[in-house]
Amino acid sequence: MKLTEAKKKKGLSPFDIAVYIVLGLLSLITFFPFYNVLIISIAKFEVISQHNLYLLPLSFDLTAYKVILSDGKFWSSAINTVIVTVAGVLFSMAISVTGAYALSKKGMPGRNGMLTLILFTMFFNGGLIPFYLIIKDLGLVNNILVMIIPAGLNTFYLIIMKNYFGTLPESLEESAKLDGANDLYILFKIILPISAPFIATFGLFYAVERWNEWWYALIFISDSAKTPLQIYLRETLITSNQLLNTLAQQAADSDSSKVYTPALQMATIVISSVPILMVYPFLQKHFAKGILVGSIKG
Image (cartoon, rainbow, N blue to C red; front, side):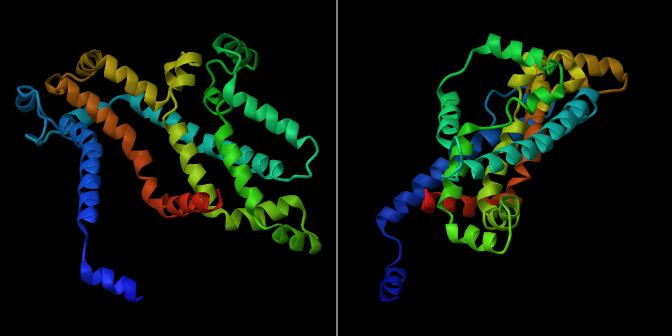
């Protein structure tokens, strides 16, 4: 207590001030790209098209957002991404949690062999062509499930979960088994409730991965009605001029021809990023606790 009071009276040291300055500069460097994307997305065609450097919001125009939100392909892609994210997180967490809990049991038959095979997949794979042939034989080509099932398990997350479950006191399970509880009851009624912050952390990781999914869609999906939001974003960044012309033809009174092309591209990035960013405030508390648990229990 005396040391703490002495530090408060003493104030910040030069080292503390230097650390705050460095961290503040790093925060600004990290934040600036997001800020730059935002101000370009609200850029007015007549004003900002004459500038090469965007440091201040010289204008305010939501036409780029109107153009994107009026495109039917955007909404179908957004719906596909929401489906993939929700279903993918539920599927990934189900197999990751149950698999990690089972592998954390030292007396499980064949445990070492399974762990060896799982770890093997972290360093080696069969290549893209054999992988494509397997997906084709499973009937997942041009199927939205191709963005959920093949990427359902992250080996790294599984290993961390397994190590965490292995650190929990065995007395919890022993006392529950004395009361007649089986393994599933222990997992869902005892282990998961006390591991909520840890589980929420990896749920967030899986959600970000599924929301940003584009690789499997790019390779295996050719039907534009089944593509996710990230593919739509990619196409917009590449063919924004074609999109503007198409939308202008669809609506004779549309002012989309007056949209600054980079503004259209940046508006697509903002719209694609906002939904997943909105998840963070609700999981931030659990996320911080989960990271703390991992740092303490290794």
